[in-house]
Image 1 (cartoon, helix red, strand yellow):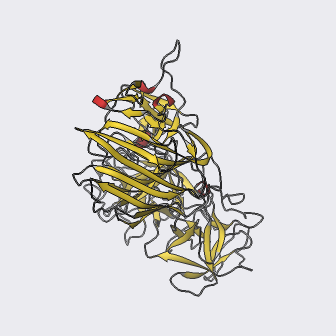
Image 2 (cartoon, rainbow, N blue to C red):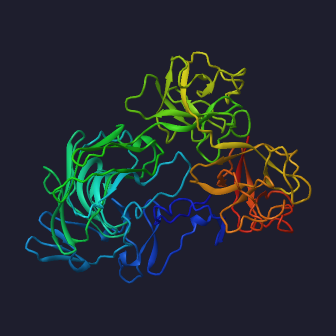
Image 3 (cartoon, rainbow, N blue to C red):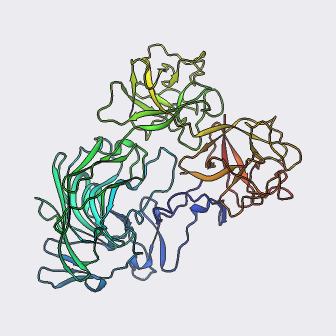
Length: 639
């Protein structure tokens, strides 16, 4: 799927809409990849190639030419032109009197006038809804923006008087990919966020491959941002970030943000709208692999102390794990408003690993497509449990690390051998972007399943408890000589992939082949599935990189898009009935993939999916032939 994503999107809108493809200049494409640009807005491109929409007013004017964008810079909250970012020196204050932002000197003199504050919709917090998010990719992918966080709304009726948090600067990341990491407590309203920030990497305030701190007062992505001097700190340093209300005049509130004991890192603001939403947050950009995160399991945000007036409110933090590609998650250890503790975890256990009954191997099954199988076509996870692997743990259980995911075949292979081993997708395994998985070995069967063994030929992990060890991409069958006995934990949840979907050679449609009767065919009689291969569909997973809201029809057994006002006519009469259907996710074609068949198309008339690679598109239950105008090119895994 061609990703022509403009990244200025709300947090809720960042989820795939599930709409059918649309026609745009250049050809059909998913509806969610087409973004409108309104009056007073401009599309700009960063040096990294990211496209985004910003207000035209934020672009500076170059001599003798039309408005041209600045090179965009990164701050907490996302990308913005550097003309929108302002250093507030020690002794100065950001003042919002009359809804106009100015920098005032120590004697109250105006040092800079930044114009009228553009207020956003009231009643909702500014972030993460106005943070730039990365374009969708294949899972496991590496997300951007607010990754994981805990939040609480001050609805006590008494304004917040202070909010402090203590945390320790973690060890640096093991790899450097130009990533930027922000760790902070923060308070916000619907227009601005106030935050003492620990930073790794280069932001608009400066920095590099080291840790540093600054206080920030920031609008949403693309808007104004103010910061104190950036001050370097060292791994192991203890930080205390404090935000304090210093005054109130009517509806105008004044605050100070600082790091205790660190000179020049404070940022006072005055006469601004009350700040009511509190958060403890991990925010990142540019992460390309798991090792781009700090070389630590978590950062503990502790001694959290919150005051409203002269009291400490009863409170309960709410956790949001927006991105979990390396197992990131937040744990609230204590809801205390005097000594609260929140853990921001960089890694965690990862589910959705599944056994392939064809090759006996273990492969990641959380993607839309299952990956090529050495036994032919794609992995078939029918009958598998949902296996959970320990992922990038700083203190792993007794076992063996250096097991890696292959981005080409989705399989798990040992990464500690001189050669990564042959891959069924061709060449050798590619472990780029993989975390470090830990397998437990030499333990008796218990809560998990033992008898998983390493193959010394392909380096992969395969189940050794079947009558045959399974075909090996190195040729012949797997050879487990020299392997330990690995035990995998698994969940009771079923795997999110379903095989036994079949092509009907009469109507060209895709239908479920697991029913006692094949269902009514618009060509007359029942579907004929005799010549079909076995197709597998992912369901009820993240739609990143594809399109959700495809549903099975209980009347005709076919697959149809359910995201339109009408479900479409059914060859069994009336319209499709999706009662009891899972939410299937289809992939869009990007490049040929082993074990995957492209050229499946949506029919705009009946909403069904039909093969578009034959001379005739096949009869449509809406009358005439299927009409694939406006359809994307869908890929189905053949198992």
